[in-house]
Length: 219
Image: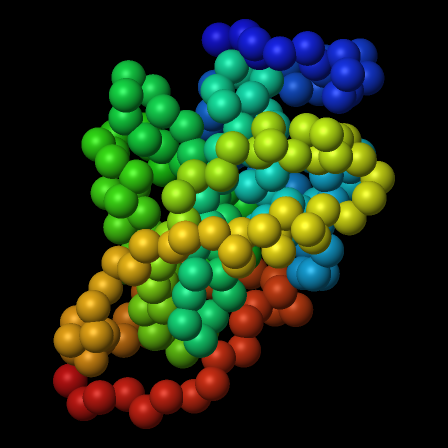
């Protein structure tokens, strides 16, 4: 697939050449996996990430959305809201009318999803069991409608030197859909220690959310 918009207004020839290495969504994920995780609360543009080779979760989603756009997909992100944990943002795409996702995360299990999901909700739920904080609580609570980042083209979101925190602020203003009711919340179990260790293997400690302790129910 080829980008259906003019890339020249956003990127230099060298930057366009950089994006050309990505032939499919999984290539974008490999790049995000191989760059450093940025523990700072800032939001650099995709163009800046080409040069710094580091990104946090939100920056990674923006980069993935821009790279997917260069492949011909609309630049769509979805915001996850969590309890006693960091929120998360993914870039989504559709292939053969099925949903998949690309994401940067300090948690190994919150990254790529193959395009095998029939709905956005189904895609989101694939993250639920894997979305835990460092004490093992399953913390995912809601997700947003997809946001098409082309709405921010006038701010040159793909290659500005300015901080893009305002896009994150926008995500707090849009509708989010709950994925679990109060009765189900009361019955949630904790992830076991082996699974917690798997999720946070190789994570950057400075970038991990520090949850408030909660007494575990006896199993």
